[in-house]
Amino acid sequence: MTRGKWVLIKANNEVYVTCEFNGDMYYEHGYGKEVVEHLRNVTDEVTFEKEVRKFDIDNFGYANDYDDYFGINKCMLSELDFKKSTYFDKWFSDYLYIKNIDTRSWKIIDYNGKEHYINPNETFVMNFGKVEEVFSDDGMAHFTEKNEPEDNTPEEKEPLLPIEFTISKFTFDSDEIRKLYDNGLFDPLSPNNSLYDALHVLISKL
Image (cartoon, rainbow, N blue to C red):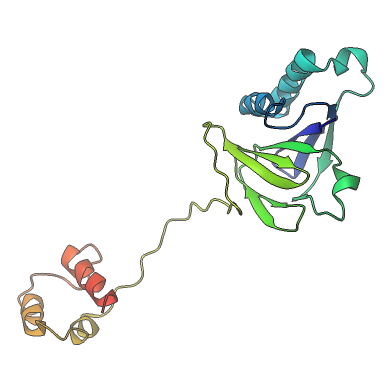
């Protein structure tokens, strides 16, 4: 019997975990792909419960037959830890289907202690604490051995070197370059000067 749970990550360290669904919860040739499709529609805890109930009605019927068992639990966590030493005490299930709707990336420590990051609007399929598949809401798979958190910080350009250093680095045509500078054909202090940028590209290859 292959068991599975759904997990929803929210802001403010809120994590929602469903009851365990018992039977055919593996990803390939089981209910896994259906779960991933349901999770694409999840944007908050309300839609999470709605999609879980739809899945339950179609496949298990726990809400009707086992009302005391069916449910979603809320817990407070700062990261998801699936290490071997604690996995069966904390999670137990064969498969976990995890969606992150927080605005930040969350660290996941897998069964072997490796670190992964689940980015906003991504879904991880985990088999006994190991990452098996990664999907984003656009439908594309983005699996890597170690997903890095997204970094939207603008890339900083390296500071441009003084013109004296620039010219002294050249061993060819330095007189011609000096003429361009002396005649004011380019401004070495302007970071937008295409010729000046080109010179620094050449320097970096020396």
